[in-house]
Length: 176
Image 1 (tube, rainbow, N blue to C red):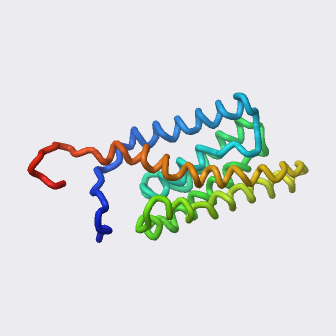
Image 2 (image 1 turned 120 degrees about the vertical axis):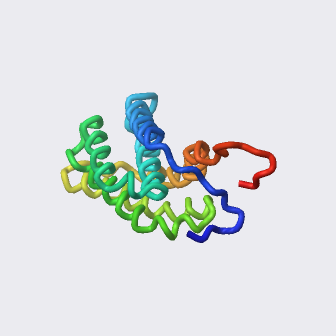
Image 3 (image 1 turned 90 degrees about the vertical axis):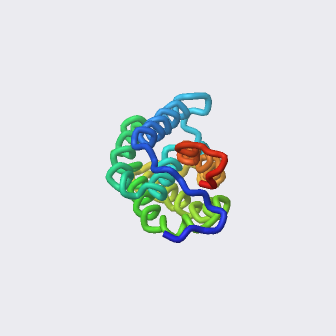
């Protein structure tokens, strides 16, 4: 693969670290839903951000099936319509995998702009399923969540790629 100038060569991602971050994001989501804000509409879905991140960076390890399973876990936790988050996360995973090669050519801030439509479409899909099943419109603050998720993309990118950036055997005389 041809790399962009200035792009750092990364070590392979540890599967244990990938699963730890996904389970950690699920735990944080569950905590945020029970915490101070309750189920506030504007709270970003950290699990969706981490799922999209790993679907972009490790599409052979984290795919649509993993997104579906985590979506079911979120449905059960929130007491939502079973399959609501599973559908949204599956769509997120599919589109993240389909655009992963193109997305990795851009800098991280540009990536955040390009994943914003993914997050908006997932939230619109969640809202449509909720409205079709007899729910109420959550308000316009609901559309603040995808913007916050896209704003979290650079932070998540730095944090989740940090273990891959270290040199396996650091040496002052070796440029890699």
